[in-house]
Length: 440
Length: 82
Image 1 (cartoon, rainbow over the protein chains, first blue to last red):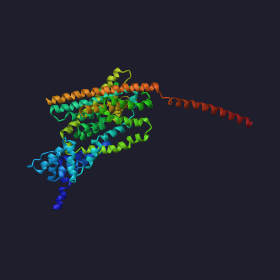
Image 2: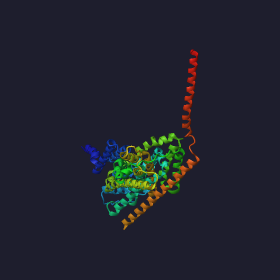
Image 3: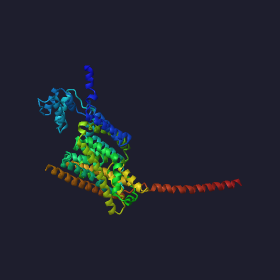
Image 4: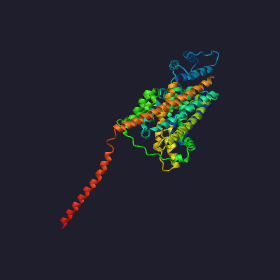
């Protein structure tokens, strides 16, 4: 009988908390969206599955050795760890209270040296880092995975349409207003006392408006790692929702006549221009914004590999095999941040709401900028391509094309919209660099 | 009081960030346009245009030759049959 009870106490069902149950359902929901609705399946499948794995009770896949020890270890070890963390445990309190204090401390801001010593003690006692925790520290905490993905995106990007009409860069700049408006919104919400976001957290939330998954993961891993799960889920879900969010805004802000504007054919772009462009972008980054160098540097490198034409094999690896491998680990690592006790908070709802606002404002600003450019420039500019200024390559450009075709079935805007679209990638990376420079 | 400070910092970050994004991308527009002009001026694509021209030029020439040959063959055969 006693053995049966031990088995029961060790089972997942006995230990499942309400939050974990909810998070498993959230994970299943993400999998449903990815598989049945085809919402960004390449990322939502690993993220959803990682979220389920992270919430398996007692397995502690997403916990560090010290956090696992805080949950499971004997009181003697807890005291040892508290001493290492320079933390006084109340001798009168119960062991449960000790465990709670310890795991809260381990989650808070802790100097790396203290954290390492706590981990060492736990590992000496036979505890090990969870699998997802390892993935997270290798892929995201080090900053590597988003950067490698950015290199792959660079290798997949054709700057031809942008080079043929460089002024579309302004559209990519205007759409970044969503980022900063959302930052202000998040700060405003804290000022009103609805939520409690610091400036760093507000900046990390704002970057969702850049509609660029790797950039938002990179920025939040630097500025607000505690919000990374919610931010990554928000930005990837909204990228999948671009075809639903953007068209109403685009139609509301443009008249039928503006939507029918036919743009002039783009000039052909020579190979030399395409090779020199990533290099001149890199030089500008070097000169003016070294903080954006990791992101834009990898982006330019990937693009140079594509355009120079002498390293086909490397370019092929960067845009296929490598980006796929990294996506798997990135998704699982983001999933590891969907742990119930961190994810289920009012703040998460705030992040989801603000992310949506960020997208909407970015889209609207891009369109308004395109309307402005249409009135001042000699060349006609269809305002619909402005919405592609929020990155979300190539989904946003396809949406511009689709809405344009609805008004005029012979007007193909796809190539024209690719210009602002890749400009949006550069713009959000620059915005990320400014945030990191200012707050990091 | 602290809230106001937070809001102020948010505003200044917004102005700074948006301003910088615009300045940087404006610079990029200028540099890109210059770069395209320079490349178009000093390194025009030399190989691309002549290739299709020669290809198109070659085809009618071949036709002329074919017509001449077939006419000659025809003429020869007709004369020898007689």
